[in-house]
Amino acid sequence: MNKMLTAIVLAGAFSAASVLAADVQESWDKQCAKCHGADGAGQTAMGKKLKLKDYTDASVQASFTDEEAVKAIKEGVKEDGKTKMKGYADSLSDEEINALVAHVRSFKK
Image (cartoon, rainbow, N blue to C red; front, side, top):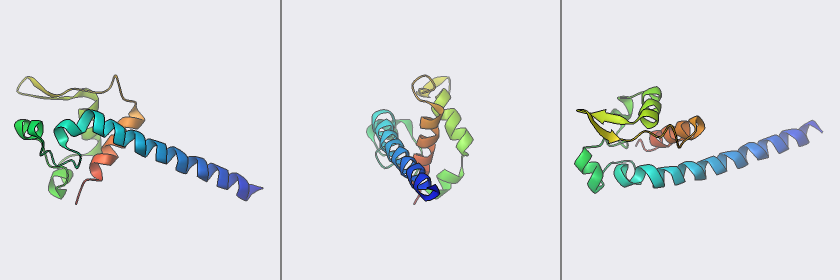
């Protein structure tokens, strides 16, 4: 009986992880890829204009903490008094934001 319960719990966890992976990809595609690119390299027209960081670069990845990334996603990014990226605290849950940070980390080569 214990093995059955464990199997059910694990199946539920894997299913939730799959849904979250699909959700994070959808969030990335919808809100981030236009500027950061599908691969996180920032080589889109808008990414080049904004001089975005290349998240495939290990040194760029090492230059910020997960907490800093969470803050940027939640609050947005301003530079020279101008909004460079809007915040998503109102439209994404903490779980979704943490998943996006993990997604950004997955770009590192």
